Length: 435
Image (tube, rainbow, N blue to C red; front, side, top):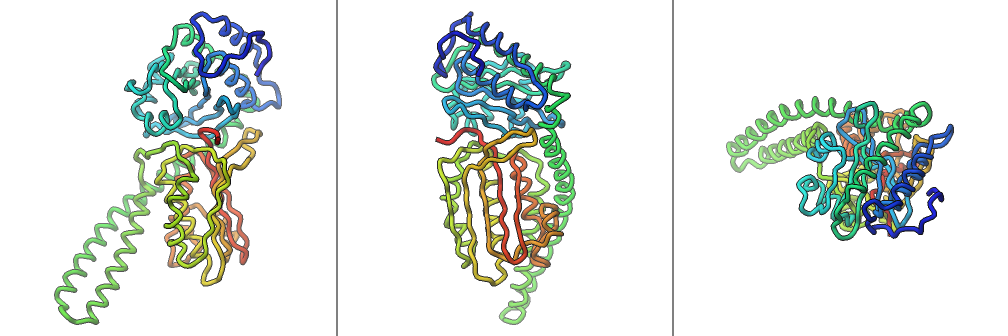
């Protein structure tokens, strides 16, 4: 934070008086911020949001930028007091919060004094605001060349808060400053800092096209399977006590069941409907899922390791549970009759971002001591219908895992050597710092 102000620090969460001179001092400091060559845009953003949190007396200030498709918005920088930590990477999708996205285009400032009674916060009150203790919010869209490119979110923790005209004016001025900094960085780092997100959005769109095609095929295939199942019932009735025929019918029913599971995966791949993201404690999810994971390991020893403190993430809980279960089942199958172990490990881990700075993620790893993945398959591991299981695999499990993680703004790393095993690590952006 800049040291230009001579005023004593203001406790976070303490509202400022209307016309408070701290706004003028903060505006002056913000006007002096510039993006210099070689300095990451996020570092400049960090200076801005920490100063704004101090001046406005709020716990959290975040800068969120739109993707190219305008259907999702990503947290580029979120300052959290008193941890004084910088969070980034969480993604919100318009299909999950349509009313809020519409409001951004209709208002210069979105001021909510009490999130519990405001219609605009109804969509994300339960999944986002309440778990983080946010009671009031003041959001200002960021305009560049007449177009909204993002939003500055000021999130108040504590009792409901009445936003004064001076505070609303200050929030709009902050958004204008962020727009200026973003424009300055266009020639340097802004395009690079957003490049990964834009690629991420295009990847999701491509997956959506493939998924919709797969979903259409699955729908027709499911109808065929239902017909086969109907004929199997008729054959069973006609066979009476003939055990040989009844055994064949049971084999046919099992084959139909496998086909139905395949169609369900295909339909999931093609879903383009709202998910149910929320603030999730990954450690809690894993502990509750531990027994199911051990049963799914089917005799292979499974060790669960949780390194705390652990920040919370913003993801659909069902997606997270399914992703972990899928990875554990894959690890079990990779044993191929060999003795070994599966390790499920979660901790916070640093990774360098495309913008060139260092970020902290919640890293969830599933590692096995199995046969490993050939290099030619490893490069295409998350593509639909690519599998290491031959005729026993559908090639959709890891595609679904990749899509679930990508929807949450995360990414995946894979390490594998033939005969040495495989490690798959999910990196999920934090929505609030651990305690």
